[in-house]
Amino acid sequence: MIKLYGLKMSNYYSLTKALLIEKGAEFEEVKAPPSQDEAYLERSPMGKMPSIEVDGRYLSESFAIFHYLENTHPEPALLPADAFEAAKVLELALHMKLDVELVARRCLPELLFNKPVSDETKEQVRDDLAKGIKAVERLLVCDPFAAGSEFTIADLYVFYGMGLGGMLAKNVVGVDLLADQPDLAALLGRLAERPSIARVAAEQRG
Ligand SMILES: N[C@@H](CCC(=O)N[C@@H](CS)C(=O)NCC(=O)O)C(=O)O
Image (cartoon, rainbow, N blue to C red):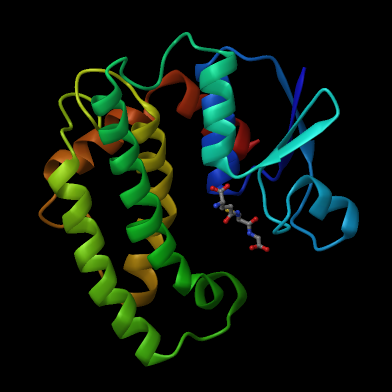
């Protein structure tokens, strides 16, 4: 049985939980807020969530966890069989993660912890987000899923990346990432109804 450590409020925890559900993996959730304690760092070297435990071994980073699950639970596949197509799916997921979500995340201290972000940082975030969302837009298919006809890992990164990223962008730097993106908005609506994602949201609400 896989143990999933973290908190339900975290978007990467939610992504990983949805992934475990999609894979039909047996798992249990263990409440574990981020920490710099030695025992926590052994599980997750940056002290972040999520992490998983499998037979007494630990793994952090949602992408690494995905890689593990894709190998141990190959069905349903969340990457195309074709190597190049599979890499294109990862390319989309990574641009969403690194160039949209992670950029917007620079504003997290202001929204969550009441620690103002400097105007200079906000300006940089606006510039970087504009590039990031354009990069994602170039790769998005949205017909009907993020990367094409099948549900893939990119759908999870787009859904959970846009969730937090979109909220931060709008509330802290006044950027609507969905402006001029009707296909992406529609995709997010469809994904919200997917059973794995809907279950994660329902259980988050408690
Ligand atoms: N790259 C990591 C990101 C994980 C991450 O940023 N987790 C956040 C919560 S969503 C966290 O634990 N933050 C607490 C901290 O940075 O101390 C992944 O993909 O799993």
